[in-house]
Length: 170
Image 1 (cartoon, rainbow, N blue to C red):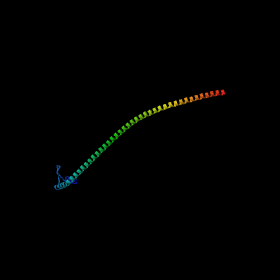
Image 2 (image 1 turned 90 degrees about the vertical axis):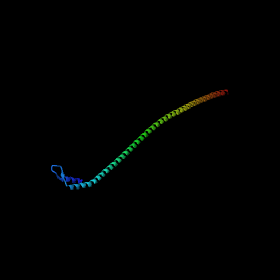
Image 3 (image 1 turned 180 degrees about the vertical axis):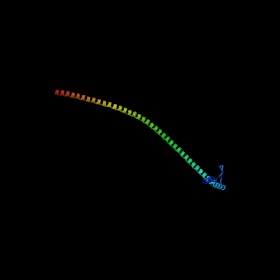
Image 4 (image 1 turned 45 degrees about the vertical axis):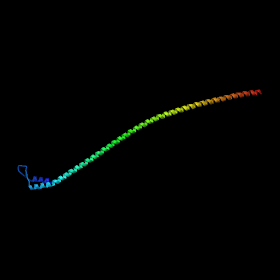
């Protein structure tokens, strides 16, 4: 940029032609500055090209990195979605199995109630028969006891009569 500043100073310091916008400057000074500009300009252009190329490389790397990051984020989101679906399916399957288990438990409970009722009915029948046998046994005991008492009374009466007649006959 200093060469451009020197060219600008040469034009400013040059001799102005009256009634025009023209300036007279030293030809040798102008060509010297122009040669310097030519020698510096390719370096500056090369450096600018290098900077532009480096900028493009950095932008390309950043875009590649951004694309990779976006891809990874999409994969992660898909994985989370998949895990969420798997979790939802597992929860639905668990709910279904619980419902099945509750239904089976209800059926088993009903069968157990019916079985218990049948067993209690059988026990009731057996106990009723046992009570009938107990009642029959008690009845037989009463009859036997009454029969024994009657026999004893009859024997006692017979004995009294027999004793009563025998002592009288003596």
